[in-house]
Image (cartoon, rainbow, N blue to C red):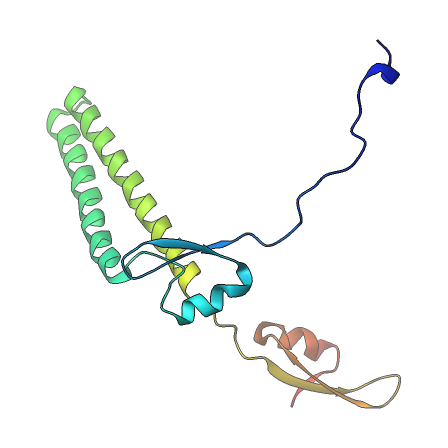
Length: 159
């Protein structure tokens, strides 16, 4: 068999590089898929990017933290009481690790929901100005508050 005998694709076929549809949720938790261009319309209609009720999740988070604390406390107490790690201590350690994993999953869900539901507020820029060294013209711009010192080293001053 030679390369000439192997069938080749005569045309190139590819999917259009379009934005993926976004999943939105109504108050009852039912989801719909909408085009990226229509997301703001559906959000205005009461749909949300996240389905988690943050108040409920906050209460659940407290319970999970207590569960983790109790599980590890029981594990530590068992080891101290027996002065060795016996099978019941191994089981308690496994339960404690499972509680930690459940807590980690809950925290991940909360973080994903918050980042999907709320926008990150960017700090207001700081207005700086300088006289351009070559042209002598006055320049103004806005910079991130954390970069004011860097701009000051190049002759920029707060406006």
